[in-house]
Image 1 (spheres, rainbow, N blue to C red):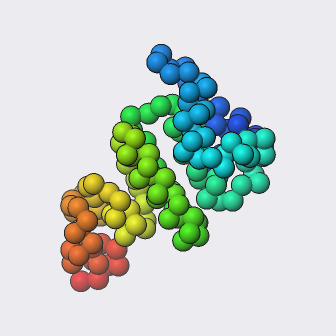
Image 2: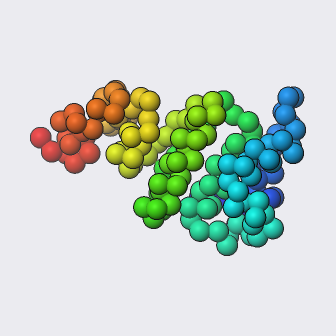
Amino acid sequence: MGVFVQQNIKQNVRLGFKTQPNIGKLTLDNKIYKLFPFLQAKEKDLAQNLSGGQQQMLAIARGLMQNPKLLLLDEPSLGLSPKMMKEIFKKIIEINSKGVAIIIVEQNAKQAVEIANKTYVLEDGQVALIGGKEILDNKKIKNIYFGGR
């Protein structure tokens, strides 16, 4: 999941902070807590006490403390319940709407394609398909994912 389980939530979030010339730690904290209000309510709790989805959100929050222009997410829905997966993808959309470009590597192709502006499908380490939301209708998808002919 990418969190420090023996650290509390506030410590985890602050580990992501790097001095920014135009933005202070308090401003970033407020920005993070506005996006993930449950983190502020539980900031003294150990990260190990969070659910898997909450830990994933904490890891994303820590990455946002860098005030990035681009966020790379590797399998953000891995191991999550359908409800928590929806919540994670809603947050990803919200982060993107605030001007952060996002690259997602995700096995849940349907969910990822639904929120993507552009989709790249890899096969044997090579780009096999590029498209938008219509890409899931491409017959080659079945071959790539299931080895069908």
